[in-house]
Length: 199
Image (cartoon, rainbow, N blue to C red; front, side):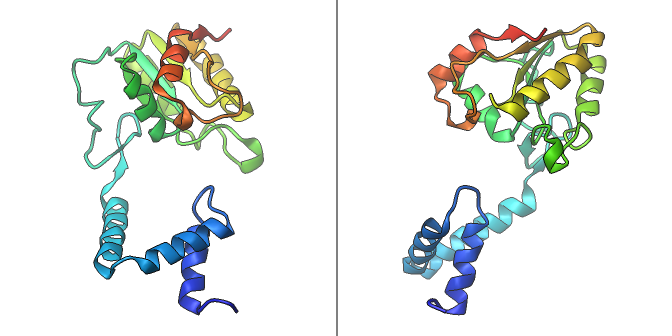
């Protein structure tokens, strides 16, 4: 064993994070160990506090510390417009464009039969119920431009069409196979403007 048990455990903890390989995990571990004790404790407190306080909005499943997120509580937004995203972080990308003034629905994933993720895990029945009850006129599906995102968009479009709602898919100046969180404001803005109906 090259490292002490505590350092090894810290490296392994970082490796559990997405996109972190062995070398990056080591760099992070040694960076943390070079910090002052108070700084490390502050990071630890922030992690524990966020995990304890942050929950899903009861309406759109965005992340919030209250029953409803700030977007769902905003009466100035267009109640007839609903944007469906894969992850809560995608809302931030869209909001930065200033091009969308409706509400959101967060799926927290995409359909992936190989990983055992079906419509039930994504709360698609709740989404369809909202469309029915809240008299939504247009649904914009902003899932990632990859196989899972496209399959999810198609499934939602097919399920929502009988409800008489217009179902659109964002246009893509976004790279196929990419994630929305990496899109800049201009690209995201153009993608929203170039949305098209899912047929």
